[in-house]
Image (cartoon, rainbow, N blue to C red):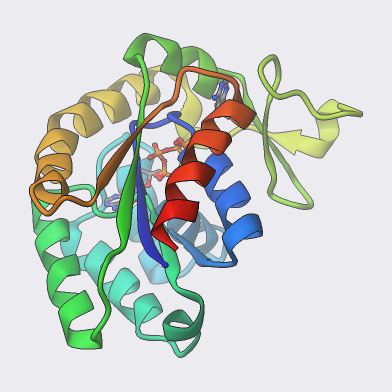
Length: 212
Ligand code: AP5
Ligand code: MG
């Protein structure tokens, strides 16, 4: 299956992607995770990406389109399928993705659109914690780890309230035309994201089981 997962910052894309990958064995391609890995490795692309991410702005399309195309071109994708998380985020990226998929002889099977009340997102992002060793995402209140020790977890740099506000503004402005782009192709499955994490996954699982 070749899938996209879309939704505002904090909607639960990464949380649900981890479950989808475990159940359906598709390759998880998160542009945010790729940028954060490049930042940690202090590559040239990482340094550039950081200058945008720290402000809550989008990394330029040319850079983002390039890394996605490179990943989709790798051999495993044709066997496993993929789940793109956080891409495309502009109409230019959606057009570039259409072109890349056509060149690689791949087609999208579905778009999971997690709908959430934007007012709930600041609380989700300010409470998000990530396990240093496994990279697994939790929430201090909504999804607390079993044996929480503060030193084992970190918070994302761009989860500071000022940056979150800018991320939400940018993504609200850019997101709607992209959903419409895929809705016109009949690919979009809307999922109610303001419910328990496991209930969100049950709804997604139902959709994907029907797609298979
Ligand atoms: P990216 O890493 O993609 O961030 P984002 O889109 O802002 O989304 P998040 O990862 O913050 O949220 P999520 O939806 O994955 O939520 P999560 O599951 O973690 O991108 C970061 C930056 O990189 C961008 O700002 C941009 O600068 C750059 N970038 C990335 N892609 C780009 C692109 N295509 N083009 C240009 N630039 C790009 O959940 C959040 C919290 O909520 C967690 O604590 C979780 O435990 C909790 N939670 C999840 N679900 C629920 C639930 N149902 N109920 C209660 N709590 C929940
Ligand atoms: Mg994420």
